View (tube, rainbow, N blue to C red):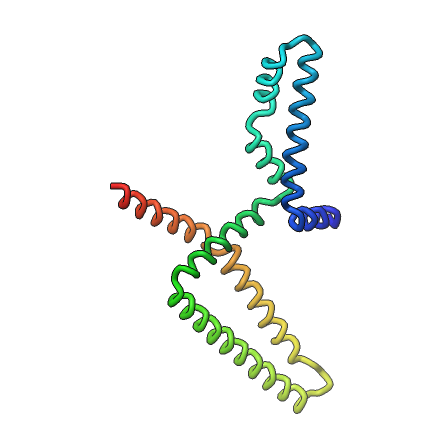
Length: 178
């Protein structure tokens, strides 16, 4: 498991090298297969054709290699972040409003979290300093926030939201082409 994680980080860190190496290795295998066919008496043109047919589409094979390395989520995340960045740069007023709203909401939540947990700490140390029970509501609240974030960003309705956005874009493109 640890080796898989190391391998994943190594690939993500040097993605261009990985892609280049994968392309070179696939071409090497195709050329090896071609030379094997030529050795058994097949013409070079026919050997090249058969090798391409046997290996199939290079793009599909490379995609299968990426899937084996579990790179799809990272590719999707990179595409989504680039799209979000381009969209936010196009609509600067919306971006400013969204950032201010986000900052105010995060600040308010953090303030409430700190005040409530500080009050629980004061109550705990005043009335029962031998038992540190104030840690449990703090941990529970933190765990709740983590699971809420996971649900919103990873397990929530992101797929249906994405599908709705794709459908909206398709309708806009259809309307423009008519």
